[in-house]
Length: 78
Image (tube, rainbow, N blue to C red; front, side, top):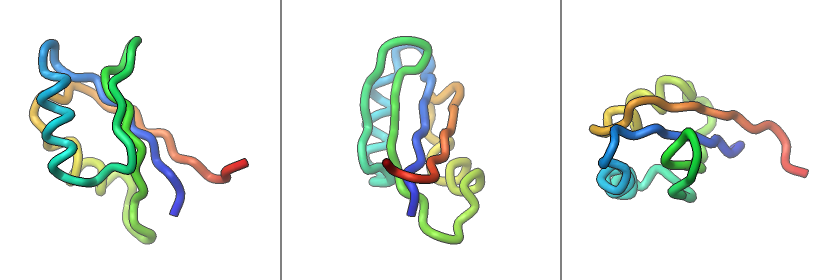
């Protein structure tokens, strides 16, 4: 399994509520609050054979308060 990073932009004032909802789903390996254009940075491992887009759309983006996401796939650790 390769790590997948998802950056999330939340509706103003909802970042902590979004983070709490994500934590309850137990999808992530790590979850951080960040500065800049994105509010949260999430590291997760998507099960082998799963469609990445479908997994993220169905398992993560149904969380209320998420406005936008940016997914970065990884291929090799150095």
